[in-house]
Length: 155
Ligand SMILES: [Zn+2]
Image 1 (tube, protein in one colour):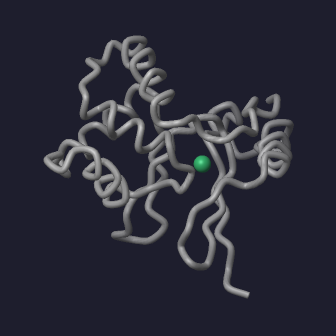
Image 2 (cartoon, rainbow, N blue to C red):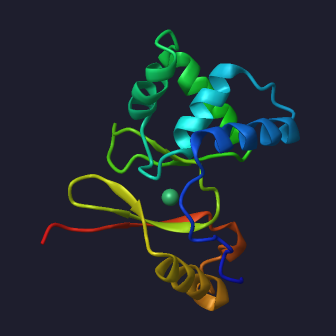
């Protein structure tokens, strides 16, 4: 497995994200509604790996009438058509987080609960090591690895 190609560039501006979202929605055969655009733009415009609650606050700044159900449903659509990843809850009953960066990469959960992307060089090294032979004997196809999550303990 080659290290994933993930340009180390800032997230696109919200307007660029909406343009991108329109093209990607069309490519997935998903109807592009204003509310879907808002949710995608809010997700793509941050690298904080927001929860539904975080996204709801962001999208309500632009559309106070948007419902939590719409945000949930839109995120399900984005995940099912490959435009976003759902990061599993880190604790039982905890919230899932979402990421518009769908390239394989490594996440770090900090002691304060924030989730950040590992530096590109770290992601590349870990994913390359897993892909070259690191999964031998596990029965897991390294090509199926969508990402890696590392919890950072308190000092
Ligand atoms: Zn990420």
